[in-house]
Image 1 (tube, rainbow, N blue to C red):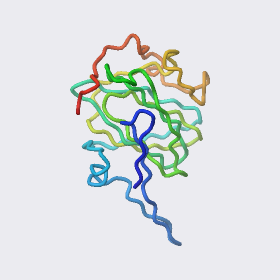
Image 2: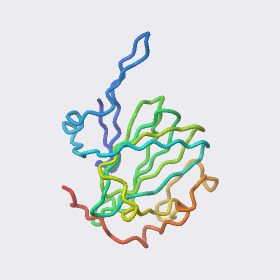
Image 3: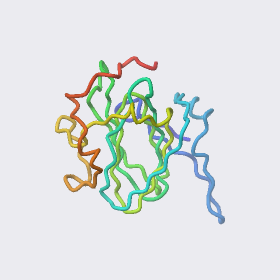
Length: 188
């Protein structure tokens, strides 16, 4: 497995090894031991699977607040997404900045988003299926979000104003209106 840090180093791209032959392939997509050796010590407790029918479907930007915080490990098994993580850790040198990457079935890559980040993705192909692990169970009372189109974030979403969104994702507040629930040194 190859692990690469993005411009915000806590967010990592992961490229699992894929062993193929005439029958198909085999890939170890998660190993707690290998991830710990790479400095990723999240203890995942739940797997989620989403299907987005249309290209341009945008899900996010989501996070859970303390004490129900979540780290995420996301991969795509069909299609592709433009994936975004926004640093919400107050006091971080990258507070309010975002990183993005294309995660796709063809590239067989993954992204690790640590606690303290809002996360979202926009599908690049119809029929995109995303699998992701989280380090805390879903807790509706702890779920919050960030406006996907906040001008202060200046995220260049591939779908632009034509993004397909849920009503809930249309109503999240801007970064300047969020409570400061994550501290830079939290969880270290």
